[in-house]
Length: 298
Image (tube, helix red, strand yellow):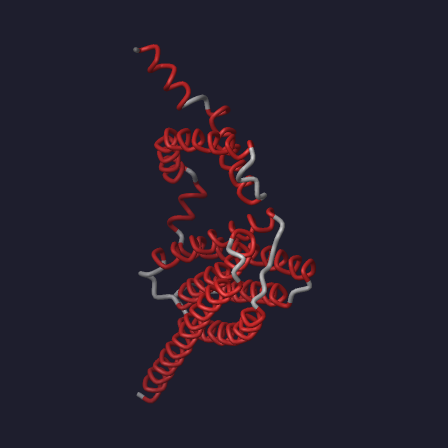
């Protein structure tokens, strides 16, 4: 009995130099099979078994990974500064997000060239503008302390709102054209995987931003949160069109209604968000101007 237990434990928790490559191979192979259309091939059955084993390995190693992360967060100088210094964390996050946005815009531009599609050109311009918005906020965090000059921050907040409003209207027109023509877009599997990775990253960033920055009253942090949310929603729409063409039904009516409803919901949400930002910025700026005038008169 003890021998069997030892063997099972060795299989479930092999050395790290064996376990982690198996985890990467298992999940990587099943993604390759899914996106390459090999669901009914012998390779698919191999990927199912390997990915199941990879999941077992990951579950057994999860407590160790958590313990390593807690230790790293408490002892590493970079981690200590990142989690304790809001200014540093925001600047680093905006730097990284700006670069990722630009790379994703380049990917959409590449897809537009390959398919001669206005839709992908529009997405490339959209994500490039999101990167520009993040650059504006990044410039603010590098020069001024967060929350110190709220009047200046609300000016940037209002600028982001105007840009979001204009971008959303432009993207809505392009999206309406795509829905009207009821077009599908097929990608290489690597491109589709990259789009899925960006979508999940954007969604995760938006969720983390909402919960991480909810207690801070900084317009820069709020604007960054709204940009992340907008990016996540639009990337979900672009991924939906790609996934629907690759794995969805050939029924054009179904594709029309799903794309139309998703596009309309995202358009209305971003429009409402931009209008809310404009109203909030106007009210806050007017209040600050009134307070300043009252103080000077007095």
